[in-house]
Structure formats: C-alpha cells, structure tokens
Amino acid sequence: MSRSSSRSPLVPLAVIALVAGGSAAAFAYTAGWLSPERLTPARLVAALAPPGGPALGHRRNHAKGICFTGEFQSNGNGVALSKAKVFTAGAWPVLGRFNLATPNPNAADATVRVRGMGLQITTPDGDVWRSAMIDAPVFAVSTPQAFYDLLESAPKGPEAMKAFIGRHPEFMAFAGWAGSAPWTSSYAEDPFNSLNSFLFTDAAGTTRAVRWSLRPAATPVPITPEELTKKGPNYLEQEIAQRVAGAPQRWTMTVTVAEPGDNTADPTKAWPQGRRTIEVGTLVVNKVIAEPDGPCRDINFDPTILPRGVSVSDDPFPAARSSAYARSYDLRTSEAKDYPRTSAARSAKP
Image (tube, rainbow, N blue to C red; front, side):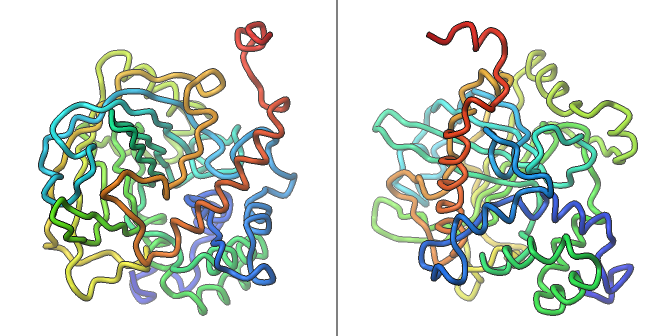
C-alpha cells in the first residue's frame, strides 16, 4: 500500500494504538548478533510492556490465548520439498494456541487487530517443529531494530509515528491491511502466515527458500469491531471452544517456494503472485482447552525449533524472536505464583 492510496499520510490513530498495543507485537524480536548497546532481549521485552507494567506470569506478548490439540494430516506432497518426517504421509500430533497480539491477558477481543497461532508438531523420530504465525499477510517492519523503534515511537503520538514512518515507509503495507482488511468472527475463519522465510532441504540435498500458510476451511464471516464488542470481551475463545466441540476445525497448510530474486530476508515484502505453491497437509483441531490448565501454557513457541530438513534462512527475525521468547519465558516462569490458575489446578498441587 502506497502513501497515495491511504486516507492520510499518517496511519489512523486507532491503527497506531492497535500496533503499539499488540499488533506490532505479533512477534517479539531481538537477535543475539545485535550489540548490547543497540538492542538486547531484555530491552525489547521491556518495551512490549504496557504503561502499568507487564502482566506477571504471562507471556510478554500474545498474552491472551487458549490452547488446542489435534493432528497434522500430511498428504505426502511435502517430501518434494523437505526430508522432514512431518511431510511424509501420515498423521502427527499437534499442540497449539490461538492468541491475540497484546501484552494484556484481559484485553477485550475487539481492541486487538492481530490474531495469532502458535503450533507444535511432533513426529515419531523425535523431531519437533514449532511455529508462531499471525493473520496479517506481511509484517510491520523489516528489521528487529525497526520493531523496537516502532514500540518506542507509537506511544509518543502522531508526530513520532510520522517520523517513524518517514524512516520506515514499508510499515504502510501492514498499516493498510490493519486499517482496511475485514475482521472475522472466529479464529476458525482466520488464515495464519509464517511471514518469515525458512529453508527446506529435500532428500537429494536441494535447498529452497519457502514460506507457509494455514488457510481455513471455514468460510469467513466479516464482523465489525463494534459488533464484536457487543458479543463480549472473550467471545473469540468462547466461540472457538463451542465450534470445535461441535466438529473438528481444519486449515490447509500451503508452502510457497521462492524464486531467484525474491526477498527472503524481509517479512514486509510479499512474494509475487504465481509462485509455486504446494498443499502439504491439513491441520485438524479437535479439542480446545482453557489456558490456565491447558498443555500450551508452558510451551515456548520458538520458531527456531525445527525438524531435520527445515532450517532458518537469511531472515533475521526467527533468531531474534528466539532470543526474546526465551527472555519472556524466563520471566513468566519465575512469576508462576502470579499466574491465575483455576481452583482445580491449585488443589491438585502437592
């Protein structure tokens, strides 16, 4: 989206607030290779905190979420791209988390623009594949340092954001999506995209840069934020639990292969239409569990935990996210006493 196609040279204040409060927190990034005086995991994670401080015991980003279990039904097509066991025909157990991109675990659904999915797939050979995806088609900024600058600029108001956008015009593509794409009425209706590029290596040793997406089987039902507000602050979690209780929900996993010249290091750059895309299987969600007692509560969806046959590319964000996720994990586990467990969980403790 160019400046000329936007309604204003500034992103609308509502969009800025959404990005600052969580939309930009779709990923928490910093990289070990960045010098400490420039950016560290501690500084970046601290920048995600709202004015009143972080919610103790919770993730520092994507703090509101609900767990699910199910399976990944591989159709075998993925072996053309990767030797990972997960792509051979079969069904592999999954554990995941639907979530909202906000540092506030009590945020009302209608106040958060970006939705996410954390996913873990395991295979009998001992491999684990973890991924953190969002529903946006592109990310907000092109580097971890720019993400930190965004977190610092957004709370300072329109002039600071105007200066930020001047330095990072790539932000407008994400802002265009955030300001104009329709909201849906269910997690089951949302797509989820890796955005970051990874490398798939096949059995013959050929390596290709790829991105993947989960495309919902459910038909999207557009809803306005005002309509979503009327349904209640926690409607999305209630709705997905009820929907899955009625019938398993499905997403098709598609893998898109880069061509020479495609930008693999910048998640703000979508690849051109017409790239080779392969459907490699189906994610089936068959059970939803509230997070306090759910299996996803203590999982760190580190995107650098990858099966053999999948590796990181020149995209700096996965390594950066890994560093920040680890920092967030250490903080919240040390604050376990502050996490609101259910009465059943508390009584089960020795």
